[in-house]
Image (tube, rainbow, N blue to C red; front, top):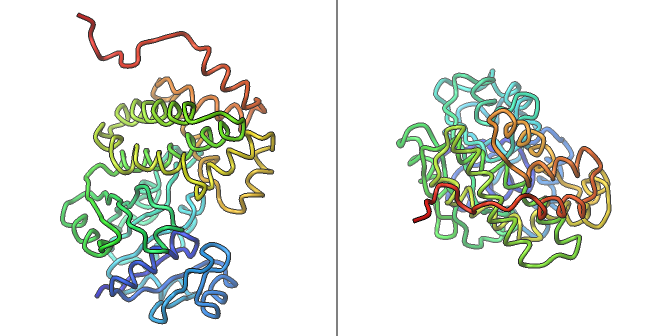
Length: 336
């Protein structure tokens, strides 16, 4: 049995805390929102984020960050990406040398273009930072539905340790050394999911969705490989796998927000209606800036930015994507 501190009590943190408790581990959840901890203690259920998912008595809920972090075998950082840096700063004084921290949020910092693991390492240099990602809606993990994910770590021993902690008969864990590739796929798929939702809101069909998924992963892979990620990663769980589920499922807050924008609502109106953090909105600008920095052609990411931040209509963005110059699908293939 491992002693685990879960930093963040949203839908994903709660679902993972339940999984880890069911795996036999001693789990303490922390939230910066005191009323959230009161609700969890009183209801044994996250009534806002995971209604109907009962949380067993062994799970503990705390408002004290220090006691949640100290003397733990493993820390799981599950706060929204926009709060990763601030929360890491708060955690730093309590984190031991070599402490394993698994980040499970998805995003890129807009101002610095850093991945979340880079932010954590910057703020908590004594930590051993790993990542967990893949096609894994909290709503389904909370219900114990079969799910597969991938853990990225700098050394195989750390990856295998985390694999053993999370792995179960309903939660299959793979491991990989490609932390960067995993994080880029995780963050940028949310931007493509916004586009997929916009297509749904405009009344487009399955052909459009398949095109966005396929060409979206092509864009993400082009950028990711230039930045140092591996092509295999983008063809795996944290790449195409996560992209498919996020573009296709109504569990996806990014797709839901995109649908509303496709129907004519503003970004703010869509985010207010979804009532959850829409990570793709925060990653879109960072993705666009990275495409410029590395001189990578990313038309879907570019058009999503125009819709979000330049008041471009979604229907006009799709028209411009379709009317671009005709090109080869794979420029690396040679004609006989």
